[in-house]
Length: 194
Image (cartoon, rainbow, N blue to C red; front, side, top):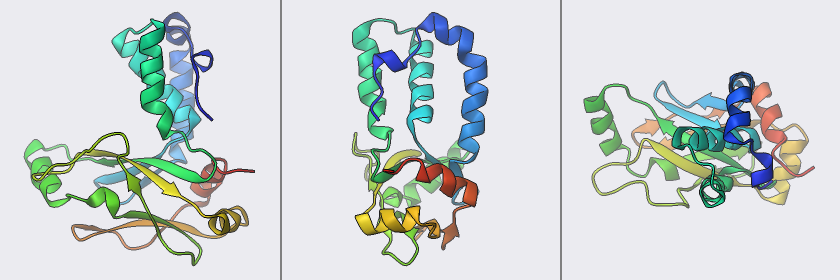
C-alpha cells in the first residue's frame, strides 16, 4: 500500500488525534520491534509506522503545503512493504558519543549482513539503504533501511506457519539465530499477500 495525502490528517486534525494515535502506534510497534543485541534493534515498518513517521515530520517541520507533504510521502513510502517483502529500520543505539563513534567504525557493512530466514529456506540478506549511501570509509550510520525480498516458496512457508528467524553475520555483530516471537510473526504475516 502506498500512502497518499488523503491518508494523512491535516496539522490541526493531527494535533487533536496525536496523543491517542501515538499510544496506538506504541502498542503496535511492540510486536514489530526486535532486539538483535542490546544495542542493535530492528523495527519492521508497515503502513501505520510509516504514517506515524510522516505525520510527525509534517508536525515538527510545520509542513502544510502540497509539495512539502508529497516530498515526505515520497521519502517514507518506500518503507511500506509491498506484499512480497518485509522492510525494517536497523537502529544501532549507543548513548555515549565516543563509544558510538568507535563501534560504528567497526560496523561498516553491517546492514548487508542482517538476514531473515523462513524454515529451512536459504537466508534472505537485506537489500540495504536503497534511498542513499549511509556509510563511508570511516564509519557506518546508526540508522539503515532494509528490505527482505521473499520468494513464492518462502511466502507459502511463512503463511503456513513456518518458523521465522533473523540475525546478523557481521564479524563485529554476530547474533546467531534469533527466532521471532509468535506475536511478531503474526504481525509480519499481515504484510504479505493474502
